[in-house]
Image (cartoon, rainbow, N blue to C red; front, side, top):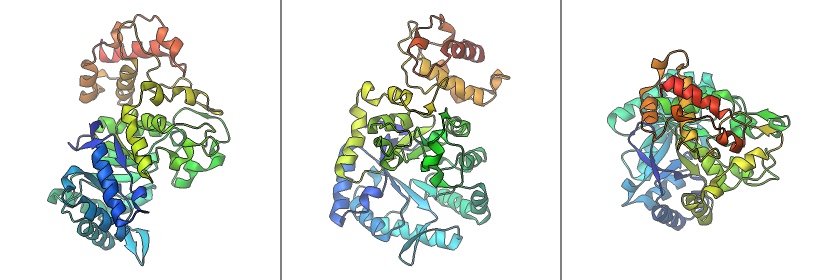
Length: 388
């Protein structure tokens, strides 16, 4: 298992994480077996969005004696009331649910305190007005949570929270179908078949901006819905009418800027093993470009997907890395002001073995690109912006 730093938090998370869906149908003994399996596979990050008391109690028992081996992503505002799940914005309910979470998990801290499920800007303002964001910050100050997060499906909300410097971690829905759609306050629009009936071209610019801003600002992304609830794995169910493999979905998510870990909602031990097998998969098994290029009514023409089909470069340039840093620099206005390049982007570009200025414009990369990207022009722009 490979591990990545979660933004600038200093927390190291496994590339493959564990959603809580697979736990919910298990017996107490099943929880123990699941945690044993996660430990065996090196999966250390567990998302815990559900407030179900049985889930929290059983997981706490299964983690006893090995709590420090896992990164727990717990959710604030995810409450249990009258035997049902409730997303609350009431501060008193939020505090009570959080105390219950710690008690049932038998721990005195959570690694990530995720403000739960905010999909509208008005809701984000309510979270700030009602004192919930302040409560999360106070918990961090006390050491009860180690990083403040937010879960959302709306890029506008994510952008606002990151721009305001309010969060350190963003849990966001990322997959190659959802990434095509514009922002919406209704999460069901992400899988509404009507939204995929007409031709869709390239990634939604706000989603691209969000991922790039997260990387620039050191906000780590944990991914939900990488498989679209399993729909993307079936040609009949997928909005794109093309079946992707689990490895392709995982690789797509893990190659987006800012992403640290994908929460794979395995419902069986085999599902979990299949997700973890991503780490041993070949480049060919991870390659999503041919499947993307075959999707009817969907085109990524001219948009670099960081798929590395352009390689190898005769000059040894990592075209995908250079293009990623170019996008990050341009997002900060570096085309007009080269001093606007974020220091982290400049330094990461600097340590590349070869740089855009070494491009000889042979065009071999462009002949291999499945998405008709103007790579030579990108290299020219990168050489100008970075200076070499």
